[in-house]
Length: 541
Image (cartoon, rainbow, N blue to C red; front, side, top):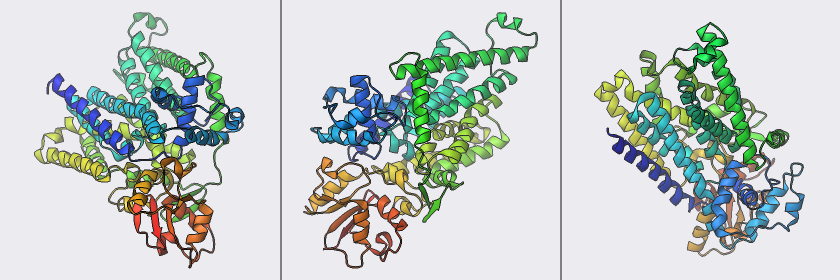
């Protein structure tokens, strides 16, 4: 395959991401977290003041803020929520978000422009996956890895939202890829690039700090493996006469320099060169705001405390079967023929293992999105099947091709409802609520669908309970907003007041926590429509 053909196919994969993300996000309303993220990012860009939304670092809010600059939206700096905002009062960010969008002329267009930069980051992720896989296994593997990324429903779900998850996945992968290249061929340019990418990962989401635990591991372990670390200058030999110890010393110094550059980039992300303390301050805010009383929902049961297997189960339920089967085939061939060096296996698998372990231990159990940084490494490793001796067999090639077609078909079948994707074992999106809730399924993204449904059916007085912190009237949804507890009280009554009720499936599910319900709306009521698998419409007239 020629370079021009490879480049053309890579561009085509990036275009597939853009098309799927762009046309699907136009059909999706603002999600729960975007109410805070989007206004905060715009305020950072316009004022240079980072008082809003301390729960996450600024990068993946700055990018949406830049995306909105051409629209010049009004920034309500006279609102009381602006003056009250700060690390000690994180709840005012929601009030500011409501004030920001209440004054917007066209909310849908504003949200669209805020989301576009994240789509570009998702396209960059496809390129990164391609580059990593190409370096390990060749250009054909790079294209396979890029295709796995471009059509993965979980990646696409967050590729069109102005949130932090795709940014973290992208810059985590790129920083590991850059670290490998630096270790094998150190140059000043590669050193700066590696540190910059690590800094961008840290600036994307606070869980990126897990990467800082991997750097010392790699710095000490990789030099023990032949070819994994190159010492370019004989002057380093003055440290010790032993070549392995020499490589270790050089690797540690190189890694320390990478972290120094990363910290500088982090401080620049706050428009305050050298002020890493701002990042550390906000990191403490996240720790203090952990919701210890949150009840985890899994497979029809609410659990007080953590479910140890939650994230493993979420991964198995929301990862396409085609990808899991491909990983299985790759695992079988890997036992027989190991297509990459041991150092590369450490670079690929250490992030996956560390992420799974720490997320399962600490993260709030509300979404597979916390595992999103794991997926790109799996795409890269799975693509190694193309250089396995087993791939020479016709049935293996046909099997891999069939799995890729299956993955593409799964992606197209769930369009535009990528966030609600559940695989065939879980029963598909329509059965998702039987397994998981919250951002695994319903994040308040279907008010546009609700507006179209009510308009098409001539309903002007619906009672609406959405999984959102803002008034559905922002999206011109006809009807009256009804608080969740009131909606549950009415629908659980054997004789509810007549009317049309449109209620979030997440909130209906959480209604099970109320004791003494005579009627379970999800079990006992028959909706006239289920919009995007997230909004249940009951016509009780």
